[in-house]
Length: 301
Ligand code: HEM
Ligand SMILES: [Ca+2]
Ligand SMILES: [Ca+2]
Image (cartoon, rainbow, N blue to C red; front, side, top):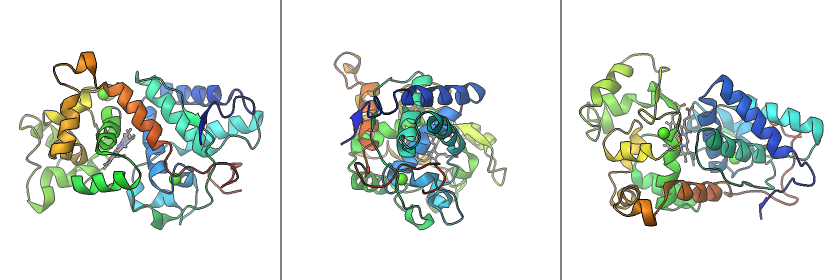
């Protein structure tokens, strides 16, 4: 139901406005690209891609534990404010996030693609509705189930997790993996032994959990398939990423991008990523007369 260029007559500059807001934000802080990409994912996984995550208030969804560390709200609001001055009440906050994620990928040297629009903003945002968010320490089976519930395959699971090719994580998400993996009292055995001391040095036990480290070692600002190589070689930073190589099915997906013929006949990571992003951007969308077009992204009308 979404279409490319939904705003081409009602707000012809919509995409350009979002893109310039994203570019400005990224030029003052590179990591904003990753933040915006993650924001769209977190929006889509709870109540669909409907802006539910943007609502302010103490009982709102954004405060759910599953959304820990999510940000970029002020960038979306800035784009919304500019859009309201040129086309009042036309562009949804849900679409702004989808466009911003697309632009964030592009500015990180990732694939450029047309984003479909026409999403409307939801009227529900509740702190207790975020249980669909996958959390870093869950099992691979649980990740498969949670993606499957959203209509996403094992391949989508792998390819979308490769969004971790850009961005950072707080040590907060590393503690269990480094010091008490699944209750073992020691580190995740899949961590390459040459990498473990490096990770432990960055995130010492009982150290500051707010310290951040790149998720894609050596390539955190570039949108590429390095993250999949890192996962294969034991250089995954997040436990959830590492778990993708502990399962036959998801392992096969990762390996498929490095096969002998993959550079010639595919599969091609960037093309597959776009395909999966488009699927993710369609989760539970509200269209037509459903929902509303918010005046500000942080509040219902
Ligand atoms: C099993 C699924 C996933 C899990 C468990 C997971 C977990 C995490 C965690 C723990 C972080 C660190 C957050 C922080 O410290 O602020 C993170 C960051 C990130 N995630 Fe995921 N993630 C998953 C899937 C995805 C997907 C599908 C996308 C997008 C398509 C995505 C995009 C990102 C990005 C771009 C960052 C970096 C954010 C930043 O630099 O602030 N993730 N993820
Ligand atoms: Ca949502
Ligand atoms: Ca990278």
